[in-house]
Length: 84
Image (cartoon, rainbow, N blue to C red; front, side, top):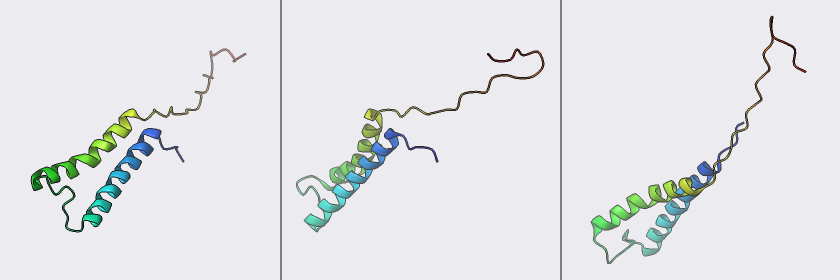
């Protein structure tokens, strides 16, 4: 099984964390208004943009995981000198 890149792990964790945060805040408030002093359209915009933005930033800043590839086999056949 291939390893999962750090970028994917970080993005998934960030998306999950923001989703949990929004859910918990919504449950605490109890009336589906996370940010009571803000207009409803701005609340919707923040909750729509927050998780994808956090996911993007986590993936952007997380280190790349180099892929390990097998070394290519040396050429063989007629007219090819044997490897030393």
